[in-house]
Length: 231
View (cartoon, rainbow, N blue to C red):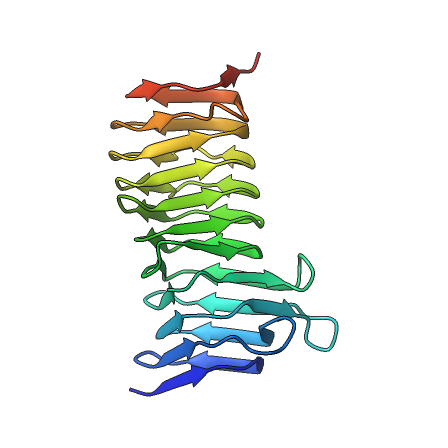
């Protein structure tokens, strides 16, 4: 199995084969860090240790893309950030496992993110502030946080679990069958549209910003904070 460490930028179409490893490390002297033009397709393992990732359009027309295939792992270790040079210049699609590990700090993903695989936040905070479409499980370990701040669509297949914290602080649309289970904390603020089931010992709390719910919440556990149920 081969292994490559990238400390600069990436252009063109790059594939990490099953069994292969790409390590993204270092802090390039470029203004935008690790610049990505083209498509990175991962069928093996990508370990993102350090450095901002910024997506650019290839030739000014086609947005950059990161595609994590089924069975592949994209591991985020550092307190890093990923976004497009403009909001629609990078798309991240995960059908495998996106895993946050190692650091107790915060890693940011600000590009469009589509998940049909698994998001596993084991340490620190994974902060998603772009447009998110989620249809897979999200597991958050004790002491860790998954924070969704942007426009978030939670679709069938979304299950939040674990003993950590889930925060939904943007505009959240909830599809049928979305559940939150486990012993962690669920924090809602902003606008939540749709029906959501929260079971276990989860806490719905957002004392400062407040939360307006249009739809229905089925809660088994404890409710506190500033929550408005819309007419």
